Image (cartoon, rainbow, N blue to C red; front, side, top):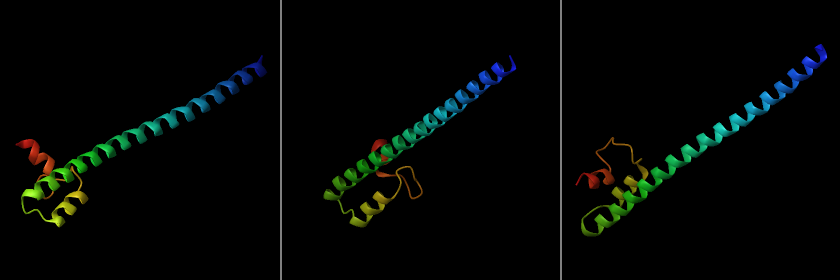
Amino acid sequence: IFIEYIYIYSILADNCIVIFIFITIINFLFLLLISCFFYFIRTFVNFVNIFLMIRRSSNSNYSVLGIIREINRSPFDFSEGESELVSVLKK
């Protein structure tokens, strides 16, 4: 009887390890998916910013350096005023 209990417990322990590894992998993939999602949102907002700035620069005196600075800046960084997208959305 004792040997049978040891055998059952060893099977349970193996299953627990497999389930733990499975959950860890799923968790990692989920975090990766979320970070990729936010990265793509950021890139999309940046592209909208670039498009708006290039459209505005055609009929005003926007400098190329201003456009480059806007590209390099994060869309959620409001350290030097608001980004182009926010100012367009406010109108």
